[in-house]
Amino acid sequence: MIAFVNGIIDDIAIDNVVVDVGGIGYNVKISASTAGRLPGIGERVKLYTYTSVREDAFWLYGFLSRADLEIFKKLITVNGIGPKGALAILSVMDADSLRFAILSGDTKAISQAPGIGKRTAERLILDLKDKMQYDDDMINREIASTTSGNAFADTPEKQEAVAALISLGYGQTESLQAVNAIEGIESLDSGAILKAALKKMF
Image 1 (spheres, one colour):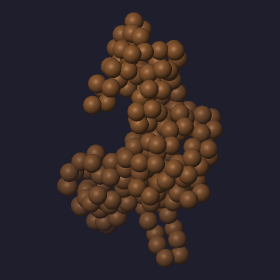
Image 2 (cartoon, rainbow, N blue to C red):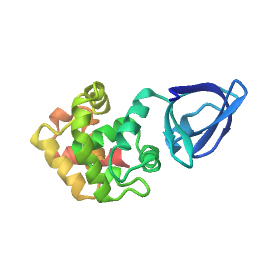
Image 3 (cartoon, rainbow, N blue to C red):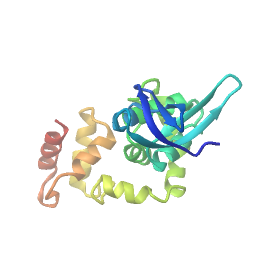
Image 4 (cartoon, helix red, strand yellow):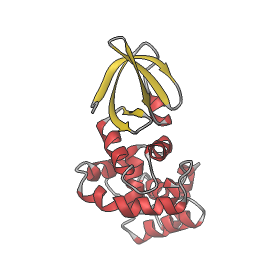
């Protein structure tokens, strides 16, 4: 119904922003991550919006990019995850990290969101993994950007280091990202990779 709002920020809260568009103040629900990236009060902002209409409520959900809006729309198709749950997930993970977590099956990273348990995270991954692979044209570029062109542990040394990190309690997504961010990794054995990755974790 409303594709976007473009106006002046009148007020900001952790989960809501009021945007003055031609003298009319629109309440727009946002994630904590979006709230932290907004310009200040009195500044202009453009938010891409999703409109939720119920018998007793009319809500706008706003995002700073179309990519964030699209992944929100995918999230709310999952049984048990409504708009509130989707915003909770996007408050602790950005869109790129969430896509990576879904493709790598990282339930631990997703279940860090308030109100999202392991079973819900598993259902989310099951429902959206194929959609991320086949419906989202940007996914391959975003994963490559996130992991320096290497989304998965493709050598025995990397695999051993990632497995060791996971056994220490780290999530698969953060373990892969830490390993793939190491410079000169080709010349390191698994023990050296593990040490370097742990340094990045801290």
